[in-house]
Amino acid sequence: MFAGVIRRPDGALWHNPDFMRLWAAQSLSAIGARFTREGLPIIVALTLDASAMDLALLVALSALPGVVLSPFVGAWIDRTRRRQVLILADLVRAAALATLPIMAWFGTVTIGQVIGVATVVALFSMVFQTADNAYLPTVIERDQLLDSNAKLATTDAFAEVAGPAMAGVTIQLLTAPFAILIDALSYLWSAALLGSIRRKEIPVATGEHAPDLWRETKEGLRFVFGHPILRPLTLCSATLAFFFGFFAPLYILYAVRDLGIEPGILGFVIAFGGISALIGARCAAWAGSHLPSRRLLLGTLLAYGVAVCFIPLAQGPLWLAVALLCIPQLLGDGLFVVFHTNAVALRQKVTPDALRGREGGSLHLLTGGLGLVAALIAGTLAEQIGIRPVLWAAALGILASSLWLLALPDEADG
Image 1 (tube, rainbow, N blue to C red):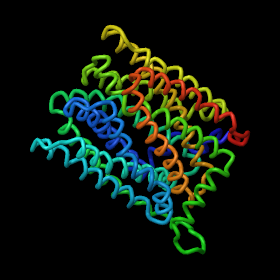
Image 2 (image 1 turned 90 degrees about the vertical axis):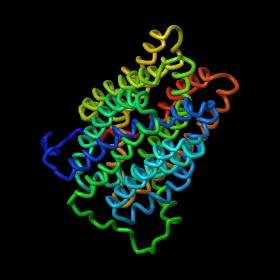
Image 3 (image 1 turned 135 degrees about the horizontal axis):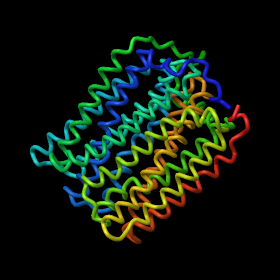
Image 4 (image 1 turned 120 degrees about the vertical axis):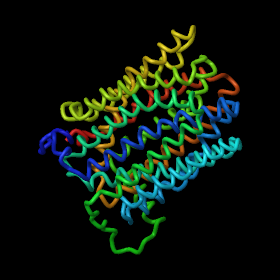
């Protein structure tokens, strides 16, 4: 299988200063991002007294520019220095987020302003993620892809432990707009660390043709959907994104309003998922090295879908509702980290360097577009039939998304 042999010693990445800087940059911004992820919906749900449809519009409208531009961004990234793109994305996100505490100080926060900030942050987060996936193989060796992705997943899992709990408490003490300032500072720290990376990027070979973003975007889409491994992985990710899009605008509203869970407690509930994710991140590389990729990806995604079903099951007294919400956090998040880490490493392994930006842009076009549509559908349905039935549809859809993985060919394990 693709990760079956790791020729370098396990500690090789610890002695790679450029990877360590990249890792540290992502660690800082990963923790800070939790403040924005929890803070924006709380601003809209509590401070601005928004409805489920308002939250759906927040998710959908903020994602729209990134969805529309993602394939072109991927083509652009394939023709530029990716580290510079990462630094630019960090600086723009920091500036956008810093406007929220300023607006709150003057008492002028509106839902339109929150959507504007969320749009800028979502757009440049897409730019950062696309460039980051393309840049990572530049600072490591090819046989370190799974190990490096597992380390990055470990950081994200740790951020999920510390970030939501810290965010929940900070939001209660300082209010959400001022808590988001921590995320803005984290992006500045990330930009500084990325600026200190010394390894030079090898110029990407772009062929004999002059730059043509339309042509190169179509080349990326043809490559993804013509590849026997990338096609089912992409379709699975797209379907997952659609049903995750049901949760995005409704989860905070469901927990805070329907179940009566305070932001501080909810932060700790979400943090439990980080504990599971941390374990999953530690196991991801081992699992990828000892299990066939198709069996591993299919099994972990099915198990994750079962765990997610406990979210719409949550009801009753506060202690029971909290306990039921903790089950998918403690069981499901780790399984999803194993799935996602191995899926990302597999994508990176089979994609040529000259196409990595376009491959990432094509993926974001589908996942972001379907997530946007799902958010609008979720908001509309929640207003008509309630939040819980919509969450049930999302959980069952996640289970069904695993069926695409049955089409993975045998060479995915080679």
